[in-house]
Amino acid sequence: MSTTKPMKRNKLLLLGAWLLMTTVPAQAADAIVPGAEWLDTEGMVINAHGGGILYHEGIYYWYGEAKGDFTYRSPGVGWDCYRTDAGGVSCYSSRDLCHWTYEGIVLDPDTTHTFSDIHPTMVIERPKVIYNERTRQFVMWMHIDNHNYEKAVAGVAVSDRPTGKFRFIESIRPNGQMSRDMTLFKDDDQQAYLVYSSEGNATLHIASLSDDYLHVTPHYTRHFVGQSREAPAMFKRQGKYYIVTSGCTGWDPNEAQWAVADHVMGPYTVMDNPCRGPHADKTFYAQSTFALPVVGTDQYIIMFDRWNKKDLITSRYVWLPVRFDDGALTIPWTDRWTPATLRW
Ligand code: DGJ
Image 1 (cartoon, rainbow, N blue to C red):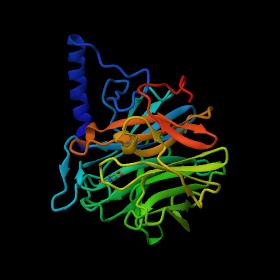
Image 2: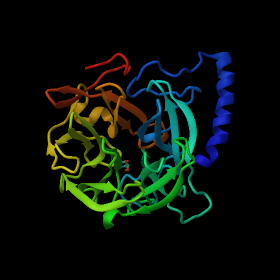
Image 3: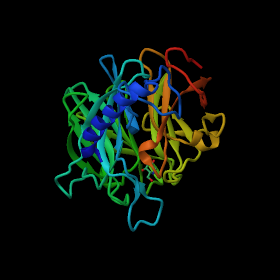
């Protein structure tokens, strides 16, 4: 859990210094290598799972789940309910999307209040952050759950700075509805939306947020009804709205799907599996988490997690650029690439 992370990190840095003298030094990659171990600028493995990215004043901020060192199965839960203690939300910063500097844990777990929604015994997943121009605050939404994922709520936190600390406000069921896997989407008109798996994960909801982004409004729409889609990643390109989702098979991979709409709240037309290449039917053994527009370009990256359910902290990141052919979206596999050089 994250309370032990600073000490562990120092120990590992000392170990790293010793290794520097004896072996080839670890380095951050100059390229994105999907599925490979990804090191930060200090040579530590990046721990930011189920992540999302905010671009603010020339810098990309990557927020993700800080997984604890120890994976265990939730006691008394019948399904494959592997988890770690919730270590809060980590943050890394970058200007080029390849080299990432660790900014620390920006939302701490609450280790003092046993009944807190962000106590280490709870689940904190898929954090996403957007900036509110009106309030000048950074607003984080995340999936909060209890040890067996039956609570199914959305948590919200706020900070004056992108690197925190974020202050946890509350967890809610949007309009009384369940909320598990989620993302945020902010449109060009500054209106923001919470996109979440609801109704027992059977149906995806899109709910508009209040002007300060801290609340869900009563205005929401239902999508892919009864189709059990989760892991939503959403973006807008040339006036159309795209959502990439996964199926619902716990930590195990399945086939992705994309859908497109003319309006943010839908209706969405379901298309097909966008993945192309080896193991495309299993999303390259990964699951979507976020769609990232590369600023100043027409390039979009879909970020996926390749979960290692029995040792979650070693789960890897699979980031791939989207290709468009006459508006049709595909995600071809590529072994190694950089946003500056690869244009499909
Ligand atoms: C699938 C979700 O997409 C993950 O974020 C996580 O909640 C796992 N289920 C838990 O089994």
